[in-house]
Length: 119
Image (cartoon, rainbow, N blue to C red):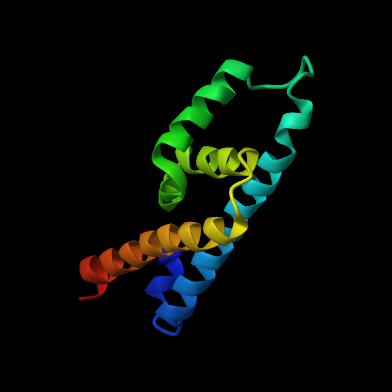
């Protein structure tokens, strides 16, 4: 993204929008996978133990849907989206909150790039 931000011919607003929407769709994929996750929990090859899943659910329930604003975080963010799918969080909460978090991250990245390199 920063490479394209360095090219003055590109629109920063378009770049911000595409990055935000694309990353939100990636989180939506994790949410959908989480929705199908529990049906395979009893299989031996399943990579997450029931204890770990229950711990993740407790943490998510403690902070509620507002934790979806943190899906922009590396590694942790994918887990938040996955757990919200497991818990069947409404897509009407999921999409706006995830988009806000990811859009804020990209806005800060572009602002930092502008402040450091362009200005």
